[in-house]
Length: 76
Image (cartoon, rainbow, N blue to C red; front, top):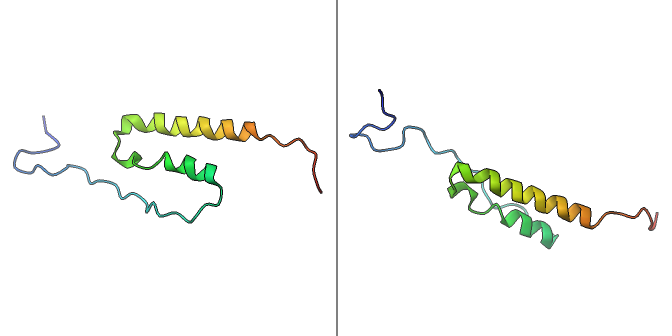
């Protein structure tokens, strides 16, 4: 069987992906900033934990959207 990492070459067999720069433009809505902050550090988590992070973020965004449902009344 061929091993991905040989004993004399301990570096990773596959390169580490380049993560995008996290310096995003300023967001004026503090609730959106809080949601985005939940993604900080996801790149160092095991891939098996990414689904939970994204699922929690999705659920939080969905809850926030449903919380402030427009009534249809207001200024035109």
